[in-house]
Length: 285
Ligand code: PAF
Image 1: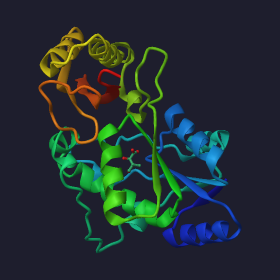
Image 2: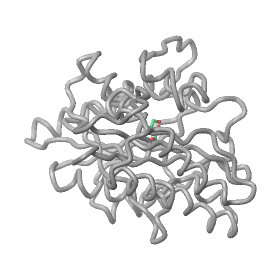
Image 3: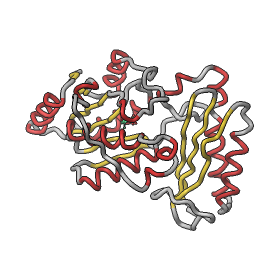
Protein backbone atom coordinates (compact mmCIF):
# COMPACT_ATOMS: atom_id res chain seq x y z
CA UNK A 1 0.00 0.00 0.00
CA UNK A 2 1.35 3.40 -0.87
CA UNK A 3 0.42 6.07 1.64
CA UNK A 4 0.79 9.56 0.23
CA UNK A 5 0.53 12.62 2.44
CA UNK A 6 1.18 15.60 0.17
CA UNK A 7 -0.70 17.01 -2.80
CA UNK A 8 2.52 17.39 -4.82
CA UNK A 9 3.48 13.70 -4.35
CA UNK A 10 -0.09 12.66 -5.14
CA UNK A 11 -0.11 14.61 -8.40
CA UNK A 12 3.29 13.21 -9.43
CA UNK A 13 2.19 9.64 -8.70
CA UNK A 14 -1.04 10.06 -10.69
CA UNK A 15 0.88 11.52 -13.63
CA UNK A 16 3.30 8.56 -13.59
CA UNK A 17 0.51 5.98 -13.27
CA UNK A 18 -1.39 7.54 -16.15
CA UNK A 19 1.75 7.61 -18.29
CA UNK A 20 2.10 3.88 -17.55
CA UNK A 21 -1.44 3.33 -18.91
CA UNK A 22 -3.47 3.09 -15.71
CA UNK A 23 -6.85 4.72 -15.24
CA UNK A 24 -7.58 6.14 -11.82
CA UNK A 25 -10.61 5.56 -9.59
CA UNK A 26 -10.90 7.36 -6.28
CA UNK A 27 -12.98 6.99 -3.14
CA UNK A 28 -13.01 10.13 -0.98
CA UNK A 29 -13.60 9.27 2.71
CA UNK A 30 -13.07 10.61 6.21
CA UNK A 31 -11.71 7.23 7.34
CA UNK A 32 -13.33 5.00 10.00
CA UNK A 33 -13.97 2.76 7.03
CA UNK A 34 -16.77 0.20 6.98
CA UNK A 35 -18.25 -2.23 4.45
CA UNK A 36 -19.94 0.65 2.62
CA UNK A 37 -16.55 2.19 1.85
CA UNK A 38 -15.09 -1.25 1.08
CA UNK A 39 -17.79 -1.87 -1.51
CA UNK A 40 -16.99 1.49 -3.19
CA UNK A 41 -13.29 0.57 -3.29
CA UNK A 42 -14.15 -2.87 -4.74
CA UNK A 43 -16.33 -1.25 -7.41
CA UNK A 44 -13.53 1.15 -8.30
CA UNK A 45 -11.00 -1.70 -8.44
CA UNK A 46 -13.18 -3.55 -10.97
CA UNK A 47 -12.96 -0.58 -13.34
CA UNK A 48 -9.56 1.01 -12.74
CA UNK A 49 -5.93 -0.12 -12.54
CA UNK A 50 -5.34 2.26 -9.66
CA UNK A 51 -7.73 3.01 -6.80
CA UNK A 52 -6.88 5.88 -4.50
CA UNK A 53 -8.77 6.12 -1.21
CA UNK A 54 -8.49 9.49 0.44
CA UNK A 55 -8.71 9.58 4.22
CA UNK A 56 -9.09 13.05 5.59
CA UNK A 57 -11.32 14.21 8.45
CA UNK A 58 -12.24 17.55 6.96
CA UNK A 59 -12.59 20.20 9.69
CA UNK A 60 -14.41 22.74 7.51
CA UNK A 61 -17.50 20.55 7.15
CA UNK A 62 -18.05 20.30 10.92
CA UNK A 63 -19.82 23.06 12.83
CA UNK A 64 -18.14 24.08 16.11
CA UNK A 65 -20.83 22.14 18.03
CA UNK A 66 -20.32 18.95 16.02
CA UNK A 67 -18.19 15.84 16.54
CA UNK A 68 -14.87 16.78 14.85
CA UNK A 69 -12.72 16.02 17.90
CA UNK A 70 -14.36 12.67 18.66
CA UNK A 71 -14.71 11.53 15.03
CA UNK A 72 -13.17 8.01 14.93
CA UNK A 73 -9.64 7.88 13.47
CA UNK A 74 -7.60 4.69 12.91
CA UNK A 75 -5.29 4.75 9.89
CA UNK A 76 -3.84 1.29 10.60
CA UNK A 77 -7.25 -0.39 10.58
CA UNK A 78 -8.36 1.67 7.57
CA UNK A 79 -5.23 0.60 5.65
CA UNK A 80 -6.14 -3.08 6.14
CA UNK A 81 -9.70 -2.47 4.91
CA UNK A 82 -8.45 -0.60 1.83
CA UNK A 83 -5.98 -3.41 1.03
CA UNK A 84 -8.61 -6.14 1.45
CA UNK A 85 -10.99 -4.27 -0.85
CA UNK A 86 -8.38 -3.97 -3.60
CA UNK A 87 -7.24 -0.38 -3.08
CA UNK A 88 -3.61 0.33 -3.88
CA UNK A 89 -3.01 3.92 -2.75
CA UNK A 90 -4.12 5.94 0.28
CA UNK A 91 -4.04 9.72 0.22
CA UNK A 92 -3.95 10.86 3.84
CA UNK A 93 -2.92 14.52 3.99
CA UNK A 94 -2.68 16.54 7.18
CA UNK A 95 -4.99 19.47 7.92
CA UNK A 96 -2.07 21.86 7.27
CA UNK A 97 -1.45 20.26 3.89
CA UNK A 98 -5.05 20.82 2.76
CA UNK A 99 -5.58 24.14 4.56
CA UNK A 100 -2.20 25.85 4.81
CA UNK A 101 -1.92 29.07 6.73
CA UNK A 102 -3.65 31.86 4.78
CA UNK A 103 -6.13 29.51 3.10
CA UNK A 104 -9.11 31.71 2.25
CA UNK A 105 -11.17 30.03 -0.47
CA UNK A 106 -14.57 28.46 0.00
CA UNK A 107 -16.75 26.91 -2.68
CA UNK A 108 -20.47 27.45 -2.35
CA UNK A 109 -22.86 25.33 -4.39
CA UNK A 110 -26.20 27.16 -4.47
CA UNK A 111 -29.78 25.86 -4.63
CA UNK A 112 -29.85 22.33 -3.31
CA UNK A 113 -27.63 23.25 -0.35
CA UNK A 114 -30.33 25.57 1.09
CA UNK A 115 -32.55 22.73 2.36
CA UNK A 116 -32.41 19.64 4.59
CA UNK A 117 -28.78 19.06 5.71
CA UNK A 118 -27.72 22.47 4.37
CA UNK A 119 -30.41 24.27 6.38
CA UNK A 120 -29.61 22.36 9.57
CA UNK A 121 -25.82 22.36 9.25
CA UNK A 122 -24.86 25.87 8.09
CA UNK A 123 -21.56 25.88 6.22
CA UNK A 124 -21.44 22.08 6.01
CA UNK A 125 -21.78 21.83 2.24
CA UNK A 126 -19.32 24.68 1.64
CA UNK A 127 -16.80 22.58 3.57
CA UNK A 128 -17.73 19.47 1.58
CA UNK A 129 -17.60 21.23 -1.81
CA UNK A 130 -14.27 22.89 -1.03
CA UNK A 131 -12.56 19.71 0.13
CA UNK A 132 -14.04 17.52 -2.61
CA UNK A 133 -12.75 20.00 -5.23
CA UNK A 134 -9.31 19.97 -3.59
CA UNK A 135 -9.26 16.16 -3.34
CA UNK A 136 -10.31 15.75 -6.96
CA UNK A 137 -7.62 18.20 -8.06
CA UNK A 138 -5.02 16.32 -6.00
CA UNK A 139 -6.02 12.81 -7.13
CA UNK A 140 -7.21 13.75 -10.67
CA UNK A 141 -9.31 10.58 -10.97
CA UNK A 142 -11.16 9.45 -14.08
CA UNK A 143 -14.00 8.38 -11.80
CA UNK A 144 -14.87 9.20 -8.18
CA UNK A 145 -17.16 6.98 -6.11
CA UNK A 146 -19.60 8.12 -3.42
CA UNK A 147 -22.20 6.28 -1.33
CA UNK A 148 -25.89 7.10 -1.67
CA UNK A 149 -26.25 7.28 2.11
CA UNK A 150 -25.27 10.95 1.97
CA UNK A 151 -27.84 11.57 -0.74
CA UNK A 152 -27.80 15.39 -0.70
CA UNK A 153 -24.00 15.33 -0.71
CA UNK A 154 -24.07 13.30 -3.94
CA UNK A 155 -26.22 16.01 -5.57
CA UNK A 156 -23.85 18.72 -4.30
CA UNK A 157 -20.82 16.86 -5.67
CA UNK A 158 -22.47 16.27 -9.05
CA UNK A 159 -23.34 19.98 -9.29
CA UNK A 160 -19.83 21.01 -8.23
CA UNK A 161 -18.15 18.78 -10.83
CA UNK A 162 -20.53 19.91 -13.58
CA UNK A 163 -20.27 23.62 -12.75
CA UNK A 164 -16.48 23.68 -12.40
CA UNK A 165 -16.02 21.38 -15.39
CA UNK A 166 -13.85 18.98 -13.41
CA UNK A 167 -12.83 16.15 -15.76
CA UNK A 168 -14.13 13.31 -13.66
CA UNK A 169 -17.15 10.99 -13.71
CA UNK A 170 -19.13 10.79 -10.47
CA UNK A 171 -20.51 7.36 -9.64
CA UNK A 172 -22.94 6.83 -6.79
CA UNK A 173 -23.41 3.34 -5.36
CA UNK A 174 -26.25 1.98 -3.22
CA UNK A 175 -26.14 2.31 0.53
CA UNK A 176 -24.72 -0.79 2.22
CA UNK A 177 -26.84 -1.88 5.19
CA UNK A 178 -26.48 -3.98 8.30
CA UNK A 179 -28.64 -7.13 8.56
CA UNK A 180 -31.48 -5.17 10.24
CA UNK A 181 -31.39 -2.44 7.57
CA UNK A 182 -29.37 0.22 9.42
CA UNK A 183 -27.31 2.15 6.86
CA UNK A 184 -23.60 1.70 7.48
CA UNK A 185 -22.02 4.88 8.79
CA UNK A 186 -18.82 5.74 10.63
CA UNK A 187 -21.03 7.46 13.22
CA UNK A 188 -22.91 4.24 14.14
CA UNK A 189 -20.12 3.54 16.69
CA UNK A 190 -21.57 6.37 18.80
CA UNK A 191 -24.76 4.33 19.42
CA UNK A 192 -25.05 2.30 22.62
CA UNK A 193 -26.64 -1.16 22.47
CA UNK A 194 -30.21 0.04 23.02
CA UNK A 195 -29.86 2.94 20.57
CA UNK A 196 -28.30 0.61 18.02
CA UNK A 197 -31.37 -1.64 18.18
CA UNK A 198 -33.66 1.39 17.87
CA UNK A 199 -31.78 2.72 14.86
CA UNK A 200 -33.28 0.11 12.53
CA UNK A 201 -36.52 2.14 12.75
CA UNK A 202 -35.18 4.43 10.00
CA UNK A 203 -35.08 1.57 7.54
CA UNK A 204 -38.53 0.37 8.63
CA UNK A 205 -39.91 3.88 8.03
CA UNK A 206 -38.33 4.01 4.56
CA UNK A 207 -39.66 0.57 3.58
CA UNK A 208 -43.14 1.50 4.81
CA UNK A 209 -43.11 4.70 2.75
CA UNK A 210 -41.83 2.89 -0.33
CA UNK A 211 -44.57 0.28 0.03
CA UNK A 212 -47.19 3.04 0.31
CA UNK A 213 -45.91 4.57 -2.94
CA UNK A 214 -45.86 1.16 -4.63
CA UNK A 215 -49.47 0.68 -3.48
CA UNK A 216 -50.56 3.95 -5.09
CA UNK A 217 -50.29 6.56 -2.32
CA UNK A 218 -49.35 9.87 -3.91
CA UNK A 219 -50.04 12.39 -1.10
CA UNK A 220 -46.72 13.54 0.31
CA UNK A 221 -48.16 14.44 3.73
CA UNK A 222 -49.64 10.93 4.16
CA UNK A 223 -46.30 9.35 3.36
CA UNK A 224 -44.42 11.75 5.64
CA UNK A 225 -46.87 11.17 8.52
CA UNK A 226 -46.48 7.42 8.18
CA UNK A 227 -42.67 7.68 8.32
CA UNK A 228 -42.86 10.00 11.35
CA UNK A 229 -45.33 7.71 13.14
CA UNK A 230 -42.99 4.74 12.68
CA UNK A 231 -40.02 6.71 13.97
CA UNK A 232 -41.87 8.20 16.93
CA UNK A 233 -42.60 4.74 18.29
CA UNK A 234 -39.00 4.87 19.52
CA UNK A 235 -38.88 6.59 22.92
CA UNK A 236 -36.39 9.47 22.99
CA UNK A 237 -36.04 9.67 19.20
CA UNK A 238 -36.48 13.15 17.75
CA UNK A 239 -37.09 13.87 14.08
CA UNK A 240 -35.20 16.56 12.17
CA UNK A 241 -37.06 15.75 8.98
CA UNK A 242 -38.99 12.90 7.39
CA UNK A 243 -39.80 14.00 3.86
CA UNK A 244 -40.51 12.86 0.35
CA UNK A 245 -39.20 15.19 -2.38
CA UNK A 246 -38.20 15.16 -6.04
CA UNK A 247 -35.02 13.08 -6.38
CA UNK A 248 -33.04 15.42 -8.63
CA UNK A 249 -33.89 18.81 -7.12
CA UNK A 250 -35.12 18.04 -3.58
CA UNK A 251 -38.17 20.17 -4.44
CA UNK A 252 -41.30 19.44 -2.43
CA UNK A 253 -44.43 18.14 -4.17
CA UNK A 254 -47.89 17.84 -2.59
CA UNK A 255 -48.81 15.03 -4.95
CA UNK A 256 -46.03 12.79 -6.26
CA UNK A 257 -46.05 13.03 -10.05
CA UNK A 258 -46.36 9.75 -11.99
CA UNK A 259 -43.26 8.36 -13.73
CA UNK A 260 -40.83 10.48 -11.75
CA UNK A 261 -38.14 9.66 -9.24
CA UNK A 262 -38.60 10.80 -5.67
CA UNK A 263 -36.41 10.37 -2.63
CA UNK A 264 -37.45 9.68 0.94
CA UNK A 265 -35.16 11.63 3.28
CA UNK A 266 -34.80 11.05 7.01
CA UNK A 267 -32.73 12.72 9.70
CA UNK A 268 -33.25 11.84 13.35
CA UNK A 269 -31.50 12.03 16.65
CA UNK A 270 -31.27 8.98 18.89
CA UNK A 271 -29.68 10.01 22.17
CA UNK A 272 -26.85 12.31 21.16
CA UNK A 273 -26.30 10.67 17.74
CA UNK A 274 -27.71 12.17 14.57
CA UNK A 275 -28.52 9.64 11.85
CA UNK A 276 -29.56 10.22 8.24
CA UNK A 277 -30.89 7.79 5.67
CA UNK A 278 -32.76 7.87 2.37
CA UNK A 279 -34.32 5.76 -0.35
CA UNK A 280 -35.03 6.61 -3.99
CA UNK A 281 -38.30 5.41 -5.49
CA UNK A 282 -39.80 5.56 -8.94
CA UNK A 283 -43.42 6.68 -8.76
CA UNK A 284 -45.65 4.27 -10.66
CA UNK A 285 -42.61 2.43 -11.97
O1 PAF B 1 -18.73 11.57 2.78
C1 PAF B 1 -17.65 11.86 3.34
O2 PAF B 1 -16.99 11.02 3.96
C2 PAF B 1 -17.15 13.29 3.27
O3 PAF B 1 -18.18 14.20 3.32
C3 PAF B 1 -16.25 13.55 2.04
C4 PAF B 1 -17.01 13.42 0.74
C5 PAF B 1 -15.08 12.59 2.05
C6 PAF B 1 -15.69 14.98 2.11
O4 PAF B 1 -14.96 15.20 3.27
